[in-house]
Length: 630
Image (cartoon, rainbow, N blue to C red; front, side):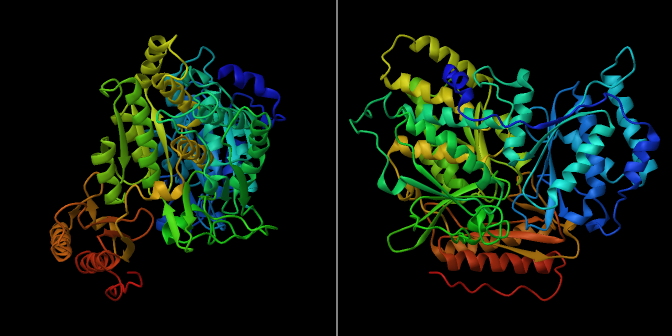
């Protein structure tokens, strides 16, 4: 596999980022003051300050220049604090409307910013005028010099990678980040328009000493495509030319309903990158060495329609409707195999229309079930007792109850519930499992492989050396060995996850309808209630139960018990609901699920009325939902 990667370097023209060399030292304070003063903090910020949510800063674009200048300075300092390791800045507002923008900060491992330094980022973003900002900058500089002393008293080298999405205001905002990071003396590597997971990939691979040796180091865009395409092809080949037939004698072939994959790019960056990826993808098929490749058909490019509007993963998953297709197509495209990315291509969901034209969604819960069951099946082919590697799935309170029961009772895997938000589920997967799978219902997720997994692969390789190539354990080893290269472990990656899911479905001989019928989702309802002060509502660590106000959880539990009695549930998932304060506004988010849509709507309505009554709701009491679905 590694040899194949190396030999493929000429399969695409190199895509080279623009490098802005750094001086290694900050500009004089007077010049930094001028830069900061030119972009003061606006007085009209929500809650009066910049907030770093679960995925970074995010606001209407005109409010962001001051923050971006300060974060350009901050990113340089973060690199210095890590002794010169590369870090990243991604300019995007993901699935938000086109008028918004934002920033995600990537640490040297390609993952999200360290929690302690997240606090520093927020403090620096809100430090006040230029003079106050420079005082805080100097505090960080002195701290870093103390941590990394040098004979000449200078800072360690600083390297910052910058990427941006396709929003019209992303380029000028990225320019501010580049200027500010350079003003601190950092070398800036500007990748231009890239997806969020690509930027995280570049940072992770730039710090090659942090990469497991099983993953080839590829630091640029063409390398990103190569490693993904070739690892995907290697996985497909374990079910085709390499493996011959399945253990039950079944020939591997792609179902007719799976031969064309329609990709909804949300009118964002993902559509552009899929189009570039297709060139290398097409060569794999032309060479005749990779069976089972689907045709990739992309719609909803930038400029075809408004970014994320009535299309993309966020719209499809929340509204449970097919995306609007803005792209003009000459021929009718099958909707039996469709995937939707979000605006910055870090989320993906699948969906299809059946013979009767009914829409079916396969969200992040379904992806987690598919991926975790596949990995565990392969591991058990080598280790039947399942003792060598601890596998598990991390979900949030929003995960459908049916998926949780399926994982526990059918896949027989461990399930941990974490607080809502990518940084929380990612950390839980890392800390709890040797192979940790997480996919939020919205389609953001990945798989994390720990040291014990890599040790397991090395030992299995030594043990199975010399066994027949078609031996089932040998096939499992080849499948598992390629996964860390195919999966973007730094962050959710729509393209990577799409290819992983497609390969698993091909190896299993399934289409989307077979996958969808593994279990039936419980009907659910999401809503929110405006309140005077969201801070009066608190929850337990994983947000499954309210801890304040004191009477709220008791009342919610009574409502759940009443719905269970009404539905006469004895076995299977029971009705449940939970509430949590919004992270961005004075509101409380409500989630309810039951064994019928009427039940879910009724339970959500009661939860909303309880929140309004006990949590100082604003305005008239919520009106009960009237379900229009059976």
